[in-house]
Image 1 (cartoon, rainbow, N blue to C red):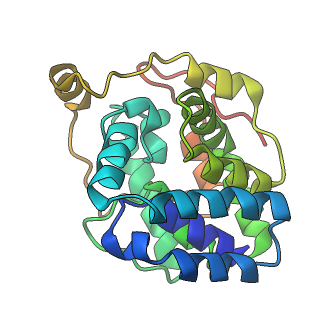
Image 2 (cartoon, helix red, strand yellow; image 1 turned 180 degrees about the vertical axis):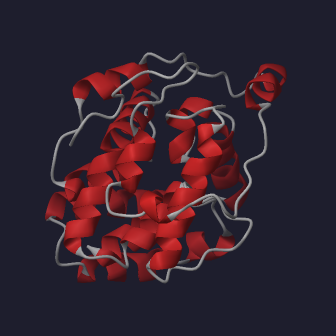
Length: 237
């Protein structure tokens, strides 16, 4: 499971020449993972081969259009539940505290809710914690997978694997509410700039001991919906 989570983390990161050249290494790491089945291995192998066979510029452009210019496909988890809410800043702090308490260091410029970073953290945790935290984010992951499948994107493979690793099903109502949000046009830069104008998130302080514990992420991922807060968004998984 750790290998699979690390691989998905890499595959969902911004493409680099090193990533595209690491096809054989990634395939070897995938083969060594004993907790993913043949179906999940095949899904990830297809994504590995797709990236490894692309020109770097092409891979970068595709990634930007999908994940950076399409807010409903953002790889920042709290974007889908907090949006422009001020609560997002505290949610970020709480998640950073959870990382710190487990000895998982992140750079000051890294956003704690960035999915590849979150998956890298999970790869260091027990199977129980992996299932717990993936389960708490599953409505977001399922909504992202659905949107990617509608676009015919092979990146949906990564989310299918995450859903399988979670070992449970997402709350359908929560997924449907996320899918109700209108799709962004990644080519409309003027509209994009207007949508992304929001207050900067700051870190440090404000996270007391009561913010700690295995259910902290669930607390942050439920009861908030863009543009206005809604109760019980995430539900219990």
